[in-house]
Image (cartoon, rainbow, N blue to C red; front, side, top):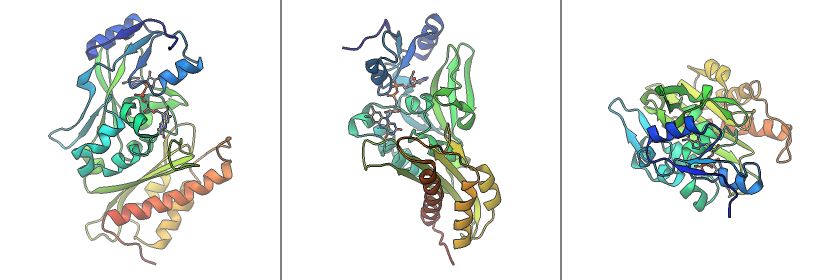
Length: 295
Ligand SMILES: Cc1cc2nc3c(=O)[nH]c(=O)nc-3n(C[C@H](O)[C@H](O)[C@H](O)COP(=O)(O)OP(=O)(O)OC[C@H]3O[C@@H](n4cnc5c(N)ncnc54)[C@H](O)[C@@H]3O)c2cc1C
C-alpha cells in the first residue's frame, strides 16, 4: 500500500487546472514511476495527489500543418519509440527514450514526467534540448510556451507555475527538417541504469554535404540541469567535415560543461566522457546525414 493523502482524478485539462488551484500542495501524478517511488521512500509520503493519468487528450504524437511535431505530455516512452512520426522524422528521440529503464518503465513513464521532474539525467532531455523543443504549459490564463532550455530552473526545479500542468512538448520543423541526430547514454551497466553522462548531437549539413550548416550539442549530467554547448555550436558553424573539426568539438565542449563528482563517477571521468561522447555522437550524426569525415 502507498501512504498518500486524497487522490483527485482529473478527466480534462481544465479540470486538472481547477484542481491545481484548489489544492496547490498536491503533487501531479502522471505515470507515477518517479512519484510512487518517492511516496514509498517517504519523501512524498502522505501527500495529496492530482492524477492526470485519465486525460486521454494528452496522449499521442501528431504533426501540425507547418511540420511541428507535438507530443502530448502523457505519451509514454514506448508509445514515442513506436510512433511512425517519430520513426520518420525524429528517430533520435525514439532511440533516446528506448534507453530509459526497462520495458515496464517505458510502458508507464511519460515524457511529461521525464521533463517536469527537472532531473539532469533524464534520457529525453538532451535530445529535446538539441532540437530546441518547446514546453507547452496550460494554466488558468490558458497555454504558454517555454523553450525547454528555459524550462529548467535548477536541480529538480522547472517552470511549471501554480495552477499549471505541462500539456505538450513541441518540436518545430526547423529543428528536425534536414537534420540528423544521435544520442549516446553512458551508464555503468547496459539496462535499468541512470545516465552517468548523456549526449545528444543534432547536425545539419550544407547541400553539398561538405560543411556544417549547423550543429546543436546537448548534455545530461554535465551540470545541474540538462545543458547546451552553445559556444562550441557557434564556432563550428560552417566548419568542414574533417577530423580536426571533430577534435575541436571535443575540446570545445570541455570549456562549457561543468560536471561534478558523485558516487556514480568522478568529475574527471565525466569530463572525459563529455569529450568522447560529443565527438562520437557528432561523427554518427554526420554519417546519418550522408556526410563523411575526412582527414
Ligand atoms: C526502475 C526505474 C528506472 C528508471 N530509469 C530511467 C532511465 O534510465 N532514464 C530516465 O530518464 N529515467 C528513468 N527513470 C525515471 C522515470 O521513469 C522517468 O523520469 C519518467 O519519465 C517519469 O515519468 P512519469 O510519467 O512516471 O512521472 P511521474 O512519476 O508521474 O511524475 C514525475 C514528476 O513530474 C511531475 N509531472 C508529471 N507529469 C507532469 C505534467 N504533465 N505537468 C506537470 N508536472 C508533471 C510530477 O508531479 C512529478 O514531480 C527510472 C525510474 C525507475 C523507477
